[in-house]
Image (cartoon, rainbow, N blue to C red; front, side):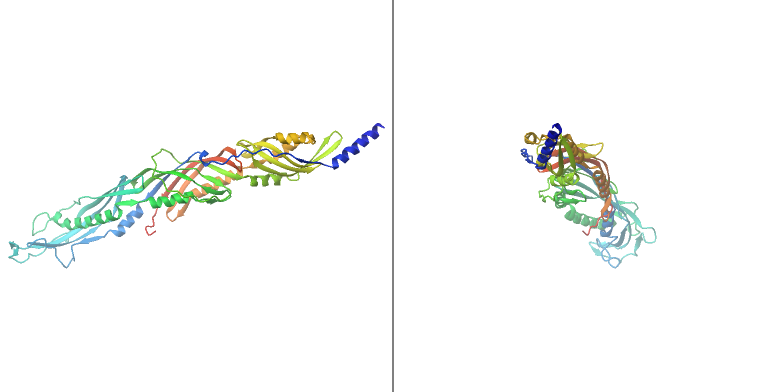
Length: 476
């Protein structure tokens, strides 16, 4: 009789188990947390830019005449008065440039020769023929003189560059004495040259006295506001806020610019909208080196849910409650943002019973394993209430442990590949003659913020970056 009762109880339990119930736990109320870009710390990016001035030399060399002569040389004479006449030829050496701080010097050595004659005049009327011509620098080495311009430049907060050009007094290295005067006529010879140089200075003042660079900076600013596709990572939007020029000086044959940028870069899986804003005036100097970037990667919960569901779908467990056997099969697991610290997991299951239950966990990042995981997973209080009414057998740590095992996202490979990708992008020639050189020192995840619609993973990246401009296409 005893065994018959047990057998009947077993059959009853088995029969009851075959008529499973549907459990639909009430979904916990979600807190609305909207991502705020201002919560992201400002990233500071300082880039030393070295611009070779050799292309400037080449441009100046191309546009400054090699030879200056008296008008219609060698056929006509320059006749300053009744009693003298002369004609000359002046050629220059290659241009030389040097600079220091905000000063740029342009100079060359000039070589000249002159031929002339004289005659007697009374009250402006000639009373004798011209003497035989006397020469200086024809049958002997040409006479030499140093010619130079001194240029000062100033950059203003509104991106205007003021160029102040001074024509220095020519410095003769040799005297020029001619037979018909018997005296030094060097200054008379250089008077024509000075007139030419002053005309060149006036043209430079007209064309380059004030240069407005704001349109070029606005173009750069607009590019920084546009989303840029980053291979394997989504879309990067730099979100610039401030721009500064920490220093601007000439050293040797190069112009050195230390350009600084304050921004809040964000990486998103979905392409964000373009932003438009006016480039602000140049901000005050701040002493930073290299770059220290805080970046928010905005991850979509649907993508995380798909990864988790693919891993956990079909996992099955068998339980015994007394003599009754129970089955639990994972169908899917959806990740939902619930508040600033926790994530909500919506688990759909089948087996002995079927339905939907909810669990909560805390997203954490393990620096040692470089894995993002959902830790401390436990049943939500409303799910507990639903299970206590008829399915308390589901209170089993095997279920929460299994979810914890699969709710892990290995970010190590992504971090390594991102670092390699960024390093490669930092070291390349962007256009002919313009290249960047740099390196990433460290990439580190520093915080995780569960928002209502996205999971925000904040990272910090620091390193060094420099720009070198070896050639300039002035035709652009």
